[in-house]
Length: 201
Image (cartoon, rainbow, N blue to C red):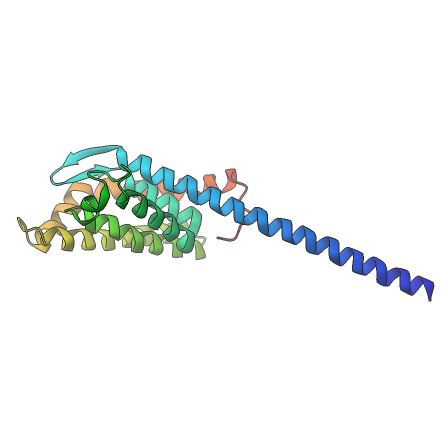
């Protein structure tokens, strides 16, 4: 009888101890998610400021950034990161490539900024696949969606039709952005390993 009571007490003690460990683990995961999101928002801001003006829209490293964010954080937390980035820019902090504040968001390049959201979502969905080829294909689809939204937005400002702006986007940035997606996909695997990827994003 005493042995059975002892086993019951030990089982309850172990259960409490495991529960406490799980609680600490959940808190740690929450903190790590916030840290990773902060890092990715910073990466987006830095890559946006590295720019070269081609036509009305600046050429930047933003495609590389959205690729890394999507491949590393996945759709949910990737979208959260880019929304935070957009809100920071809309508030007037100089993180957009051309002009910050609401003017930058509704300006001629605003379609690309808003387009980062579905682009990262598409790239993030590729985390469900192990094949790098499939992940890169998701990235290329994300680029097409981004260009379509950007061209549709720019067409509202005249000068060119939607088709003209779409052709301009592909000829101006297509090769560079496709290469950025490939680099982001390959780099994300190393980044995940370096971060000690133990959180299910």
